[in-house]
Length: 181
Ligand SMILES: N[C@@H](CCC(=O)N[C@@H](CS)C(=O)NCC(=O)O)C(=O)O
Image (cartoon, rainbow, N blue to C red):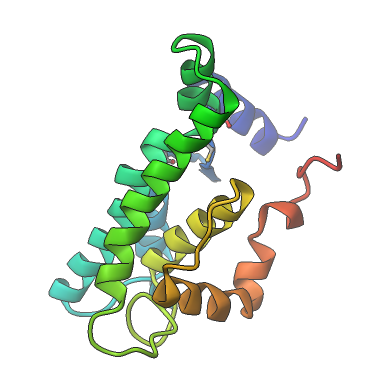
């Protein structure tokens, strides 16, 4: 086993979470910490706007997804608890999931539909960390049969980002360890 693979294994066994970043001797998890690290280490192309007010806005969008949405929908930990401890059936779990998707997407659609009605990214003319958080969450919504019909602004961003090779490359099914069945 390579040292990188060993490191990843160690971290995953401690926290049982992905993503985990291994960059030389640097190892840590939590998507917002990883995104900020990548931005600082590789400032070009930047994943944040230049002005601090706009940077704050992009972080605000990202945290709605990472903090408010993803935290309550983690499949392995939250959903397993709902099943095994709260004894919810699959329809109740789906309702739980859809409830939190709706809460988050309603807020995000409200924010994204303000101003221009032709936004192709959450902010500006190139991807920011907000898009890096939004696109996987919409992908996740489709996995759980959640209709995106009420979210035209979010879907416009999703549709545009889906045409970009970097987003295509990052899809779960395009990863080497994606389960084949
Ligand atoms: N707050 C963490 C959450 C990480 C997390 O819960 N990731 C999920 C996958 S999306 C996970 O690893 N779940 C445990 C598992 O799938 O075994 C972050 O933003 O990185």
